[in-house]
Length: 220
Image (cartoon, rainbow, N blue to C red; front, side, top):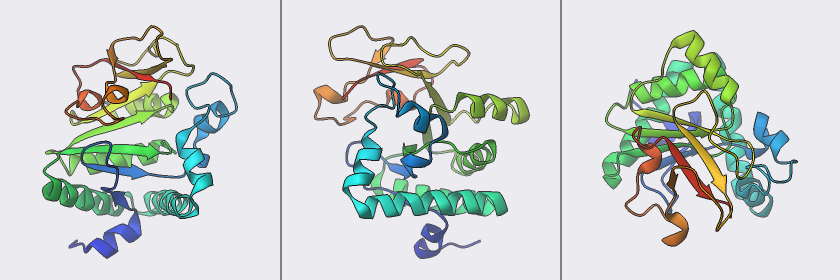
């Protein structure tokens, strides 16, 4: 299928508007997170004080856009996952070619909804082998079920499973992970440098690297 930008974004919108990181991002409704919605109510969890939820409450236009993206994605993936993957991969490639940044982040807001959604994302990654994809998630069960059913994800997709509580060690059973630490406290593995450089990735691409086993983010 030959896509136009208008037609592709009607399926799901891929954004290039995050100035803090390279390339493109995909955002959905943070209030639709399965595990995250439970953890948001738990003080000291990695989802407590969720920035995405705060932003949705403060900015109605963002709330509407992310909710629509979630509804469009889940509906299309349920009915035609190949078409959804084709539409988002078209946008990812277009943004990469314009920016020169061959990087994409899944779930700048929100999280995996199902094994079917992860399968559709994998198809999009397979359609964009020149792009490095990063998918942070709290949905460890979905990731395990996907791998049991389909095997490992492609090499250009880095899925990082996040630990539950601030200060926790990396999640067991997953090679690539992420943790959260408080400022001045112990961190596991590679410490995200963003807080020291204007909350910006700068030249760092560790989140997208399979050589970096755990990324530790400072709680903000």
